Image 1 (cartoon, rainbow, N blue to C red):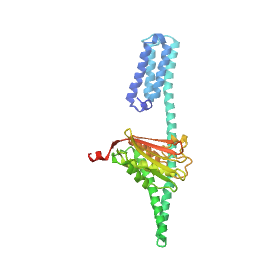
Image 2 (image 1 turned 90 degrees about the horizontal axis):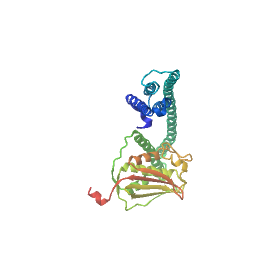
Image 3 (image 1 turned 180 degrees about the vertical axis):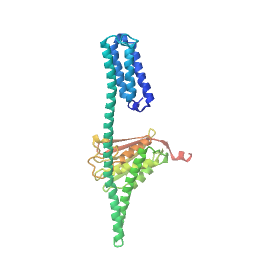
Image 4 (image 1 turned 135 degrees about the horizontal axis):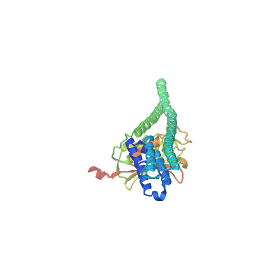
Length: 359
């Protein structure tokens, strides 16, 4: 039983559990009544009602409060097995018990309501903050490539014939780069939507990880003065995973390494097969990630405060979602010599070319 989900249980089940807890407590007290005394029993029953009030809705708690008062009167207050109370002190104690049990139930319910309102308000504020962050990021990330494309196209339309061929090629390259950047942002939004909707289901097939990484290196927008180093692992088997998700994971990690590192950075990609897992690492020799930021780096919309380059803060959260969708894990550490290292490990079936021909 999940302690925090009990109020979502059907009312009938809440009534049964509330009554059951009171009866169990009363039964335990009954067999210990000679040692405890009926005043101590009252405190135990009140504690039981308080516990029930933390778990269930108001009406099951009120029923438990009334039931505990009746049981205490009938089975514990002298003379027992009767609702008659001999002296005024016991009558006053019973009245106070009944009142305290009811007030306790109502106050606990009110406190829970106030806490729920506070949580709802905080969640609403956080949601608004996240959407503002997203809109602010996207306003830059989408507007910049769109403006580049429009400006370059206008220039080609108006002065295309008069422009040197070298300038035309440069403008076309700008359109190509801006188009890829725009496509990447749209893909990130669509991928995040797939993750949050819960409809993402990996489609497993055999592929060569060396080939996938080489293809993704050719696709990424290479930043000037930065280098990608990848040595093909000839001993690597074929893996059976979702090749589309693997492509997105590699692409996002490469773009992240290229966009958020200083000039003259070298990005290194390594792949291997170890203990039934497909493992690849993407590292750089940049400044690394502040230690206090590492635990938040995969959160949606999270960006480092020092980031000067635009970004929606979705890339790494999508990477984490795609890795976990294939039952894998991703980690981030800082290299001892400087720079960040992302390590992806996903359990996968493996096979070599000779075996694949027979499948």
